[in-house]
Image 1 (cartoon, rainbow, N blue to C red):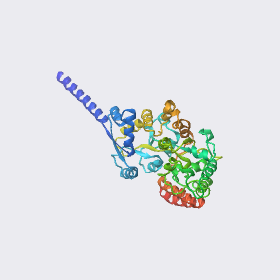
Image 2 (cartoon, helix red, strand yellow; image 1 turned 45 degrees about the vertical axis):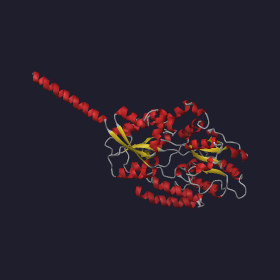
Image 3 (cartoon, rainbow, N blue to C red; image 1 turned 120 degrees about the vertical axis):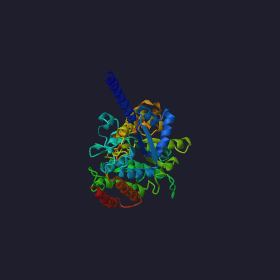
Image 4 (cartoon, one colour; image 1 turned 60 degrees about the horizontal axis):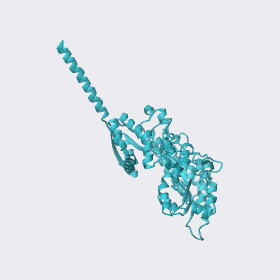
Length: 440
């Protein structure tokens, strides 16, 4: 009997040891995270400002090591396409450009969020970020970064042209019709034959991310059908035609907007003091403040314009985080995604690098930090927080987004250079419909 008790005790002890060992092993997982190369410097800045490394903290809290692989922007998309297409089990979490949600979901490249995040957790994100993460009534990735658009005003040129400075009140924003009139007056500051001053300049001229605000302000939609499978009747409707005609006119009739200036060059035009109105992202503020300090520019920030009779619409969205359906560590992967999009990390990330977050906790930081009571950062409180919650409109949810983006961007650029707006839209519809056929 005594021998049996000893034997039984040994078995029980061995059982506890096995359970403990298995539990410890389960907590010691590693996950592989693929993202853009810009994360390296962002992580360094994060640690400098708030005093800890969020990857190291995650490992300390969970026992899960994160192997972060960073790739240049131009290589990231191809790398993910190849790895997801080959069902690479070593890929666990990855950064996804949010407009690609439908494309990835349709091909089975992302694990749906499902019950991994509760409704309460999802409600912490700005509406437009959840909208672009949703396809066929399912959320396929978790919002992470965000973006917004404002209008920068060159105060010196406004004074020289005799124009009253616009209000920073979101309820008293400029109309695009007013922008044209102001642009003409600023353009008149040029001497005969001179092209030194420009009335208006778009930060990302011709790129759909920014240009979509024009038709969307007119209630014309994103240019894609609700089911995401067609553009006929959506990309060439009356609103799109009106928006394109307006774009044609400011480049070819009133000529208040320059041709041939690439997005990489546009901020320097405004920084040099040669542009009256600049429509761009909040990320331009540091560079413009540097120009202000150097005495080259005196500027103000006002809300993004809209069409008279229409509604305010602003470009938005950015990078999200997704879990691979082929991952062998999905539980650990979801823990990491939830951790990275949590209130604590999102608040600290905004404080440290200034990148807008998809988590609404950013607004809490803005309202509590005295820094956001003074120019130019007060615009985050009075304008940007409002736009993210009210006027932000996402790009279309469609499996052929890349083809759509390329064709629509080319259409805007062709019209900018003098192509007929209506004919250009008709040709673009035909082109995109052919590309969309393979997804139907």
